[in-house]
View (cartoon, rainbow, N blue to C red):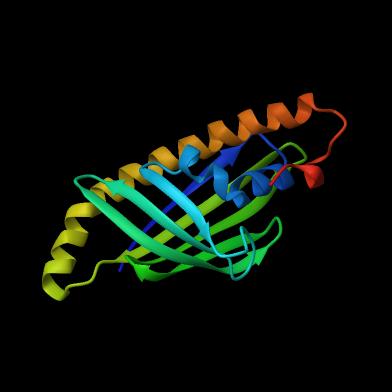
Length: 163
């Protein structure tokens, strides 16, 4: 299994960062290469929510169905694939101070197909590393932009952010 990690620093409080990343509608804005990310079923966040995801990774289009297996507000969101590319993804959140936070992102993936799958996995690894770096930069940028919108709307706190 290949693993890629990064940490994104966000110019936003922890609850704002969590709210932004917890909203499935934002995934294609920050996740490099993700072209579609839609809930399947009644839940659109939290434990048991399931999503269909399509991403471009270099020359490949990868389709997966993933389920939220851990969800603790302002602490962690974790997903595992239930079909498609075999993957586990976690977002671990931490407050730096009252107006800054970090997100540690980790994705582990394995492609099916024995020796051929492992060869393709090695080919995709540089694309995944580049996508992870770009995703970290996108998270930092998009969360900061989102926070500016939240701050401009002084009548609402992070707990009232739209889902």
